[in-house]
Amino acid sequence: MYAQQIAKIELPSQPSPFALLDGAMAQPVSFFPAGTEIYAQGEKAGPLYQVEFGAVRVYRLLADGRRQISAFHLAGETFGFEADATHHFFAEAIGATGIRVFRIASTADMSSQLLPLALKGLIRAQEHLLVLGRQNAIERVAAFLVDMAGRQGGLRQIELPMSRLDIGDYLGLTIETVSRVFTRLKDKSAIRLLGLRSIEILKQNMLLEMGG
Picture 1 (spheres, one colour):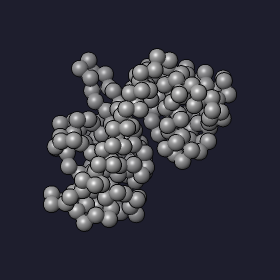
Picture 2: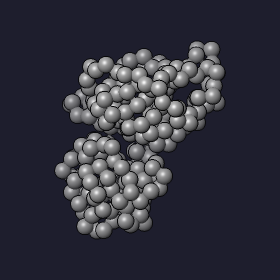
Picture 3: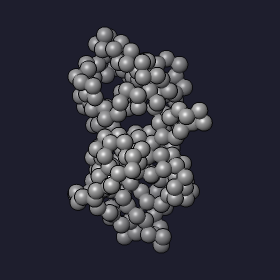
Picture 4: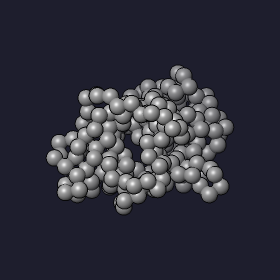
């Protein structure tokens, strides 16, 4: 987390469930350099956030100082919804990231729009718990790659904006284990490592079977 000045720039808005509502006021896109905090645990909640470009990690710090990442948000995805008036997690830009803030007027009735967002977040949280419940590290990583591919349009070549350390903190694995699993999947010809953050999925069915 770094104290840096946040630049505001104008970009066309990504499709949003709030963009056409009178009670949702879209702000200019704010630019967050890598590692910059978007909001902190314990801060007052209220606005909703949409990733215009880049990626965001949402996490908590455990009592022993370890970090547990609960979610990643990619371009076009919305986050920041809370059941009460306080943020229960930190949100931080992974790389250079543009965020559009939607401020909700206190008089706006957005229950019909917020309910699907809350349900979607609940489903994703439940899926994350199912992944963490798997004993096998290769199953966790395979499920993660299938999820990332689905969120990027089902493309064979996917980009991973997060580091191996981030993936480990999301899946409850060490960075060494994540790296070993990527190598193992490569050796099985399930994936091709095109770069540190770029992967080509060669055998989608194999990953589905491993992560299923």
